[in-house]
Amino acid sequence: MSIQIETVRTERFSMRYFRFGRGDKTLVILPGLSIQSVMGAADAVAAAYQSLEDSYTIYVFDRRAELPSLYTVRDMARDTAEAFAALGLRKVCLFGASQGGMIALVLAVEHPELVGKMVLGSSSAHVQQAQYRVIEDWVRLAKAGDREGLYLAFGREIYPPEVFKQYRDTLIAAAAAVTNAELSRFIILAEGIKDFNVSDELEKIRCPVLALGVYEDAVLDSDATMEIAEKLDDRPDFRLYLYVGYGHAAFDTAPDYRRRILSFFES
Image 1 (tube, rainbow, N blue to C red):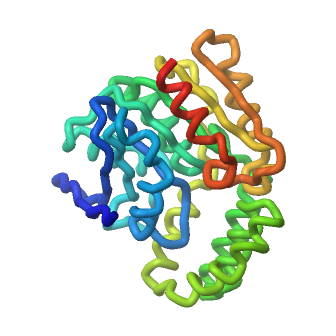
Image 2 (tube, rainbow, N blue to C red):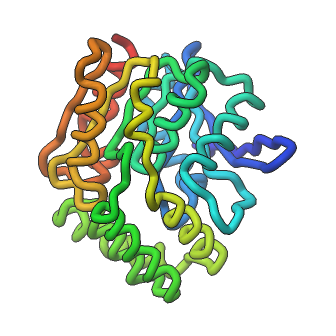
């Protein structure tokens, strides 16, 4: 299988994405912060979500290609909304992982017409200073040009120890291919998370929401998911599930993760 990378263009920017599946319903995945673009892993993503292909046409979006020097999560969300409009996407099933979940929250708040149902994976509505410290360390390593140190720190924080040990050599190999442009892009996207806060706007969300968190989230902490739950748990269309033992990237490591997403979207 070879997934084609496509580009959506607006008057202000271009944004890469890929799509797969043949279903009548639309699922959009907004991935989290990564050192190298998820576009390079399109085949692997399609393989992971193969079980959904009959029911959904699945879109996976990158961030915009031309990044300004300051680019907040709200900016990312507004550009993503513009990309949705250019492609005619409305009332989609939306899954946002980590930073992608922050973008999804802004979309649901500011553009409710775009989101039919939403799943948030290991995400946050309010990134407090203590929760930004891990990301701040990643930025420091990227600014120092320490590719291997960055990849190892990234993997150590998002995976449980046994998974990190398994992937360690793969992460080191990936680090050797990181370009200066990718480091610069990573820094801008990572710094855009600082001071993100839509906590007081969550009541504007109109769609059903499933929040999936992890007790041992070493990046944003499980408190980030619980804060979302505290704001939304009085709603009958809100669901919460917390994993144990899978790390921040449970969306990659928990074997039942995609089944939970599908079950929620189909309910």
